[in-house]
Length: 311
Image 1: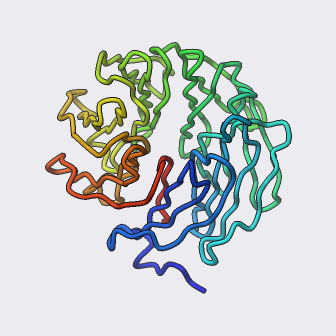
Image 2 (image 1 turned 135 degrees about the horizontal axis):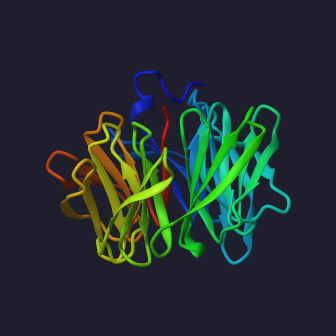
Image 3 (image 1 turned 180 degrees about the vertical axis):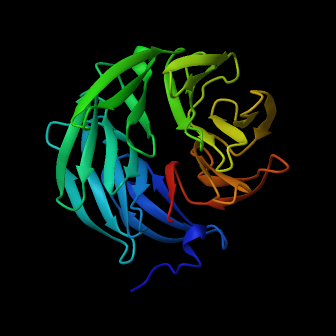
């Protein structure tokens, strides 16, 4: 059974319900949930395979730390595997790169790589930092950047030699960095500090902070570039706002009022719309990126957070 055609995949958004412990499949054109799949406890982040056939969910856990990844066949809408991570606890930030799935394990202070083809963990690297939370990776996989909430730092993990050896360096940033993203041209990494409302802009090549923007948010959660690289959006759940910043001038373009408790952010591939998981409202807010206003919402039920496009 085919769930998506080539024509419709760009209109399908995956949304995690933390309290519901499920992955929701959302048709953004009809603004309806068209499927759901049970996963592990308190799922926080999700990634999709390059071919769009599988989703990978980091089951973070609640009072008891999670230690599994859910592997979901999107055609059959079933969890086909729940990968036991053993001693690795609190899987979180998760991305797909070159067929592998990279994620953080917060308690262990590591970045981990999972190979779906062999159902195995084939690499991990410690950061030495507390609460290693979110990650971004360069397209050539030579550098990985992590936001470390508990250490006020961004780690940069760089391959050396033939790619078998890795160097780890720490970049000091503001208080409690959490949201992080890399510019589409791979030249900058931006991270939002949930503790002091600032943003650090890091030069990818020099691995140094080139600028710090101060006092933008009450408590930032996620930060995301538009695909065209023109804007950076930051969710501020305490203010029920999403901030839009011009990436080239670093100017705050607008504070956008949105539905309650904005958290995860995803952009439409054409850079026309942004979708924001409003955990307090049980909705996905739709932002028009030209007018910078919320123009609609999709009801998804309690606690939406992490999201990903099916490509």
